[in-house]
Length: 87
Image (cartoon, rainbow, N blue to C red; front, top):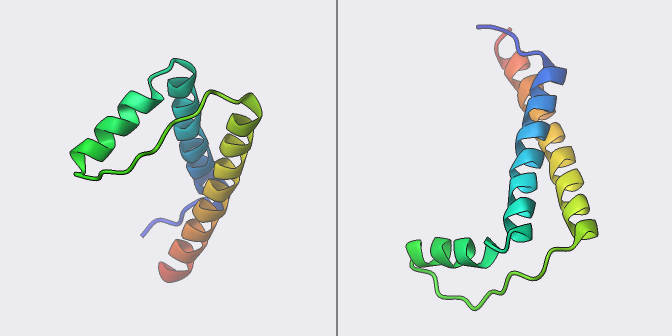
């Protein structure tokens, strides 16, 4: 099996998770957040009164940075474990 580059794998998952939350932030900025969230709950047959608040740049920045860091850690751990198991 091929070895994974730990840094590239970590960076890839950081970009993926951070990018996903950039998209969510854009959805909220555009005012589509509540409609999409309502549809997701409907499609999963979940009934919970949740309100998507107005866009907050500071909250969005924290969300994106934290999820990117978590993505980096997950990607790093995954590649490290993969490489150890596939020696």
